Every structure is written in structure tokens, then in C-alpha cells.
Image (tube, rainbow, N blue to C red):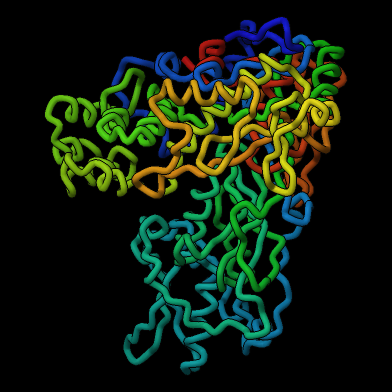
Length: 619
């Protein structure tokens, strides 16, 4: 299903060979971005297939229904996310403001500031140094003892509060030695405290001022961490459960992202102190409000993207970016919606909707081509040979993965009760599979719609009127553009286009042994209502510039933290060895920046394609 000449769509293209020096430097840069934990896990892989070999079995865009382009410029090559700092995301909140980290100060609070003693004044400089070293695990003694001068309960309470406020992650207890009272500070579980401390270990006894909103809202700046990882880190330092935090959307891991977070009854002062000991995270712009944040409340995200080592001429870049600004891009679901392994998530979703639970079990557990962690390979081999869930489970050191959760369920409920066993996988993960199938159908049908009818609204297309879908007549179609047209994600509560592509939905799902007229499932969770999604999105706030540079390791974006620390902005050369395209644009939520970038470059954005074309820096 390649792009045809009948529609103004460009051809897909590939990266040319990469400059070897750029490639070698890129390998080194890529290595810097990995977490130690990931490196350790990679070391456990068996010899054999490299990452590049593994991705031979991965997905390409055409595997997930992504076939078309809508611009007619000639594509060019560029490297996306060479460094995570090349991809910067700022949330756009519900009032339409771009969220930025630009203030680290703590808001004044009458009740907190009126305490008998400023926490910093309760401790000597020597004690502060010892506690700071203990907090960062530099103190080999494992605890710090502070003698209570002029002992009183009030004085002890102040010392307890001072330590916990100024040094998150530390616990305190009172000890009596030779008739003297000491406050002893320590990590609850030694070196592993921050990873394993129980939320119940330190109940918050201090009262919360009545005149203050119950939720502290703050801006979270993070580098190379996904949103849940960051929240888990904060919850361990603060000794609270992760569900105390709320947010409007999750953000990419391999990026610098800035978003708003809210937490229940944790003071701005405690949060601000975390900045002393957090890696790749920064908190600021604190305020107190009466409400948490809700998923989906955001208007969208603002992206700053660097495409390095581009091949396009000034004219090509201008043409591509002008088209993005004026016409937009096809609103495909991006590759991350479908997983990166040899078994795509939409195949599992299709099996769930078919009620084919043996197929669901096999797709998740059976051996698959491509390199995986050695313990997963052994687990799959054990399952294939014995079909014994307990034996396969023993091969997994990490039980929290989907495979582990399903095997635990099969072990608990038996192989004849796969539906209940599958229920042990968290609900969001389970729903991800069927949403992935919906996305696959949507992508495929949108490609067909553009193939058949091109970039104009036609009779039989759908538009939204007051939240409901309306079928366009021939006369109405003349008054609308492709930017008004929506296409349905399949479900029991949507209508379909009345032209030939509507019939295409029925044909595709019939071929998948699904009844488009009956999308309700025996298991209520898996009943799909459906939804509508715009076919073409036009980004707002689009701007771009061409940058010259010599060193692939030099950052090319001035981050919020660098601005706060008064660091100099990157200096762009007037003449350099390489050229990069710096582009900025805003997108509504649930749209994929990678699909906008795909339209600019006219290339396949799949990991498989990029890996095959750039194997020099991976191997």
C-alpha cells in the first residue's frame, strides 16, 4: 500500500548513510543517556542478537496502518532524539498557558513561619554537614546523633521536624544515653531506604493549616525519566504513596519535560528541599489549591525539537515547515502505541476482542524472535515446553512484568480460567491492548480515506457538531475542509462514514473475525464505545530555524533549569560541520509529535527503520 500519484502525498524515504564521525560520537552520547539499572539488565542478555538484530523483528509504520503523507515537498533526512535534550516538552495547561519552571521560591505561609524556631537555626553547621552526608549516603556511621540541649518535649519536636524537613529521606528517633536525650537521624533501611521505605513508616502527624489549600501544585522538570518513575522517586523521598500525586498527562521518558503536578498535604517547603538531593528532577512554581489535577485536563503540549545532521537544503526546509504550519499532518497514532517487540500490542488486543483467550495467552507468553533479556527467553522456553505457569514464573526475577503477572494469575486460577488470570495484569495495561487494536484500525482506514478521496471533504465524510458526528451531504462537503473531517475509532457508540471507506471498516473487522455491529464484550471492561478523531491536525505556534554546529555532543536547547541557573544560552555557529533544524510547535493532547516530524522529514519513524539505517552507532 504505497502512496499513489492520485493524491498529493510524498514518497517514503530512508536515511542516507550517516557521517561516520557523527555516528561514532552518537554512540557515545547515546550511552550517556542510559540508566545504570538498564545497563545492568542489558548485561544479563545472552550473547547473540544485537539490538539492531532484534529490531529486524520490530514493527515498521506500514505494519500499523501508517502509509500516507499529505505534503508534496521533497523529504530529507535528520536524526531524531540523538540526545534526550533534543526533545523538550512543555505542558499547556487548561487555561492555555505553557507551563514553565521559572521560580524555585517557597510561597510565604503565616503558620509555618510563626514557629518558635526556624528549622535551619535549630541545627549547628557541623550537624547540618553530617546530616547532608548521611542523606547522600556519604556518612559511613549510618546515623547522626544530636544531643538535645535544655531538654524539653518542644525542643525535641523542633529537632525532629528540622531534620525531616531539611533532609527528606531521613527518619528520626529519640534515645536516652547516660541521662542525656539524643535525636538520632538515620535511613530507615540503610542504603536501600529510598527504594524500599514503606509509606506507612512515617505518618504525617503535623497539622495542616486550615487557611491553606489541601493540595500543593508544583512544576516538575525532569530529564530522561517517565512521569511515573519521577513520581515514584518523589513518593519514596517524601514517604507517601504514589497515589497522593495527581497530574494531567504522562510525558515521554527520552526527553526533557515540564509539567504540573499536585500532591496532597505536602508543604512547598518539603518539596523544595528535595531539589538538594534529586537527580534529573527539579521542582518549583509552588502554590496551594483546593483541588488535585485530573488526567486529560491539559490543552496540549508545546514541543521544541532538534533534528540533527539534516540533509535538506534551506529551500526544502522552508517548504516542509511552511506545509506543516499551513496544512498540518495526518493525525496517525504513533509507533509507541503499538509496542516495540515482535508481538505487536494490537494483535493481543484483537485476540481479546475475539474472546480468543488461548491466543491472548500464547501471544504474551510464547517464544518470540528478537533479542530479549535472558530470563525472559528462559521463561518463554519453559512455558513452551512444560506449559507449567509456576515453573515458568520461577525463571523470572522480576514478577511485575506483564508475563509475570499473567503467569501468577494462571498459577493461582488455573489454565482453564485465563480471563480471571489475565485480570491480574493492571487494568490500564489490559486496556492498552484493545486501544492499540482500535488505533490500528483507525490508522489503516485513514490511510485508505486519503488514498481514495485525497485532501478534501467529500460526501459521506463525518464532522463533529456539538460533540455528535454528522454525515456530510455533497453540498455541505463543499463548505468544509479536510481539517473538519473526523474518523471513528470502532465501537458500539459511533457511526461510520457512508462512503466506501465506511464499508472498509466492516471489511477489515470481518476479516479479523469481529462483528462491527456488536462491539460489546462479555467482559464489560473490554466493551468498546468508540470515539472520533480528527484526520488532519494543524499545529499552532510553529517556528523554526537552521542551526550550524561542530560537536554532536553540544546541547542546542536552552532549558528552564539552565535559565534559572543563569547559564549561557547555546551559541549557534555561523558556519559549522553539521546543520540541525530547530522546530517548535504546539499540539492538542493525544496527538503525536513524531507524526508531525515524520511529515516534515518524509521518513519512517519506526525504531526498526531508524536502527537498520543507523546501525553504525548502535553496534
